[in-house]
Structure formats: structure tokens, C-alpha cells
Image (cartoon, one colour):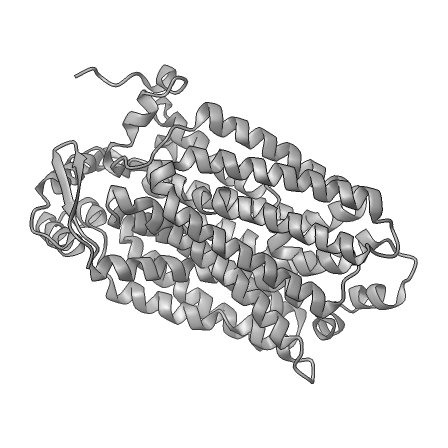
Length: 502
């Protein structure tokens, strides 16, 4: 056990230590992230496997094998193929709006349980798919699971964590995403070698394993004290849970702040209408802008299509899958670095450092492909390795910044009365952009060619400026007092009013 820690709250010191409940909460966060990451990473590798393409997408397979005149950039351009990938995200988008009222009315645990069950069903259907309809319906069920889990897991962690641990605990979700993508790429690399061509079934069925863990964690762990106070009106039980979570009976200061924060939501009947009010304008802007920027970094180009991208520049099937594994190892390493530094360095610094690294990498990769990769043939070995190095730098920048912090910052900025709906908007915007990027990237690659990378570089410059001017620092701020950071910010205080000097 860690030694006791305290943090100054509005009503006094917040006391607590790392308890078994906190550790299981971290496991649940990592598991929820793992499933999301695995589902992100698995599709790009599976859709580069010859047996899978031959069975479900014969037109793409024929174009790849037989059409020697088609441009390198256009070999995999198929709306049906991208629908397999992006159906996950449109389902998640729709499910996230149902997840908000479920999370608000029945608690965070119920949403996590619904997500776990949907993951199990989707994994079974994908692994057993006999036709394209089964395949895509399995992805849709996985999307439903993501819509519920991505909405509720970050909220659960933010409400359970002490302020000084909230950053690293929430980044456990993104660490799970990184490990999930890494395992997906390793799995694809292994299953691609199975004789008989059925290895892709193992790849698609694997999410069932972490789904069981997520479901069991949701069954074992308690509901958050915030939700018990707000929904169940059971202050005694909420205080008992808070004492168990913190590992101490001295929780009066934090408990009183929770009671105080819960008095406003009593009168809120229309949360979607409520978040449109002027006093919540900063949170609404961030609810839309942060997931939007997270997706237009271009990261899902790498997560979805890294194997396809490397096949585009001339690598073979096994080599392209191994390159994707190398990229994910780099990503996982830098997520851990982010986890260890976010509560010391702060959110803003990491976001700007990561943005600069990604901008540089997109410019260099786009330049190499523009200068050296034509419509036919491939890059030299040296140039292919150079592209791999700069994509690794790009992924390191994302893993240090917009990857984990794109989930952390939204989950910690909402007051209780709009917390569930705010997180739903964040998740929905993220899934919408995932769908759009996933559905259009291969067509963009075909039409814009290397210009695709300069397109994303432009967005990286814009989002780094956005962070510098408009995002306040939130490290070590108790979640129930987060509204103060907006009232002290040079721009947002003009909209929401300054903090009373008292």
C-alpha cells in the first residue's frame, strides 16, 4: 500500500491512499481501453490478410493481385472495406447517446455492464462470421459496447481518483488502448501465418477475453460515491464507500464537497438543454473540440491502416504487420511516460510537445512520399525505414499527448450536473470523427496521395495553437472545484465571470 496523501479541498484536506478498490478501478480502466485499442488495431491487420480479403472482399483482392496498372495509393480504396472498419464507430456514436441517460439514471456500473455484454456478443459473431452481414453486425455490436464503455469508464475513474492521482489513473485507459493495439498487431502477425487461412477468426474473437474481465470488474466494484449521492440519495452508503475507496475514515472534507456539488443537479431535468447555457460554454467547447482534434491528428490513419500503409509503400504482408508491431511498442512506451509525468508537468505542456512532434513527422513523411513514391513501384529499403522512424516519432508524440489527454481532460472538467451528458458528447464526437476518417481515409489516400499527410499537419498546427490560447491547466485541481479554472482563465472568464475574490 502507498503511504497516506492529502489534497486541499474547499472544505479542508482530502485524505486517502492507494487501496484495492483503486487498483481494481485501474484494472477496469485499462481493460476498457484495451478493448477499444484492440478493436482499433485489429481491423487494419485483418483487412491486409489475403485469405480474409479473398473470402469477404474479392474485388479488393483481385485489384491487389491482378491489376498492375492501378496506383499504389488506390489498391485498397473500397467503401465496403472501409465500412467493415468504420461501422464500429457509427454504432458507437449512436450507442453513446443511449449511454448518457443510462449512466445518469442507473449509474456508471450499469453502463459498463451493458458494454461488457455487447463486447462478448460482438466478439462471438465476428469470430464465427460466415458472410459479410455477420461480419459487419459483429462490428456493430462491438461499437455498442464501446459507446457504453467509453462513456462510463473514464467517468468512473475520474470520480474514484484522488486529484493528485487522477491524471495517471485516467491515462490507464489510454495505456490499455495502446496495449490493445499492440496485442492486436502481434495477434495479426501470428494468425496471418496459420495454414488454412482461418487465423483472422482468432483475431476477431479475441476481444471476448478482456470483455469478461471488464464485466467481472463492474460486478465486483462499488458504484461511485458521487452517483450514490446524486441518484440513490443514500448519503450514509456513499460515505461508507468513500471511506473504503480512500482507505481512511477521515473523509469529511471530500464528502462535504460531494454533497455541495450534488445540490445543483437536483433541479436539472434536461441535461442536453442545460449544457447549452452560457455558464457551461467552456465545457461545451471542449466537449466538441478535444475529441475533434484528437481524431484529426491523423492517428487513426496509423491505428486502422498501418499494415495497409506499409504495403502501399512496397512492404510484404508479414513485414507490414511487423512494422505495425514496432509502432505500437513505441506507442505503449510513451503512454507510460505520459502517465508518469502528466501530474507533474501538466496537461498543456504535454499537449503542445506532442503536437510539435506530430506536426514535424507528418511533414517529413508527406515529403518523402511526395518526392520518392510514385503511383507504381515502391520505396527503397532505406526510405521505407526512414518512413517507419518518423511514423514512430509521430506515434510517440500522440502517445505522450493527445492520445491519453484526449480522454483525461474531458473526463475531469465537467461539473456533476452535466458530467454524464458532457462525456456523451465527447464520446459521440470522437466516434463520429472516427467514422468519417475511417470511411474516407483510403479514398483520400487514393485522391490526395501524399497530400493526405499535409492535410493532417495543418490540423496539428491549429490544435496546438488552440491548447496554447484556450485550454487552462487542470492538474491537481479537485474535480468538484474545476469550475474555478474557467473563471480564472484570460478568455473564458469573460464568458462565465471571474471567481469571487473571497
